[in-house]
Length: 242
Image 1 (cartoon, rainbow, N blue to C red):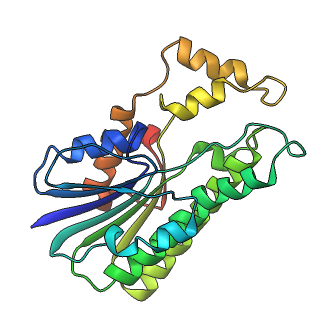
Image 2: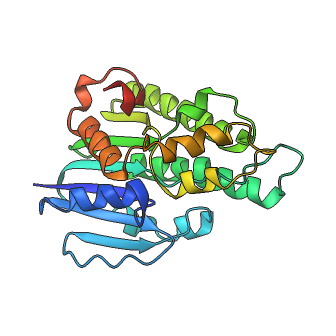
């Protein structure tokens, strides 16, 4: 039987690496959600062009995101995220704050809600991975929006697991910090001003000292968690701890 993987932010970074690794197995059916067009010519891949910061866009595509089918495993990976403008509170644009929380918090909750509605009673191994961040537990200047959005994602994931246990849906939830990965987000961080972000030098040195992990390495860790999920205790996980 086939396994179904639904991955947001699938056109670049960790999401693209996840898609690439999963498509090596023809028994995996992969649906990738991204704002840009995806040109992967594989029978077991479907790319959906969706702006996840637009609630109406998500709602209009729910049937395509969560298809019917006879699957032995169903996995949702909420990977898409945005660091947002790196700036102190008082200098933020209202629309940027809205977009940040729409993408980092609202979209994952809408997709989790639809996932449960569609698959709660389906007999399959069901897993939801929300890509979080170590920043969820740290107050970092310039990152107030990002850190708080990831903290919200962590609590949302923990609450969902409590509900799954009570409802008997057998869904396993994880909020997973992927480590410091060499993605476009890191480029954005290094492009911040020191006035807006006091830790700028530290993040610039992570790149120059080759201390960033690759998207491929992060993807391998995420897939290891999925494949060995029953060995992991607790919802909040960090790839640097296994």
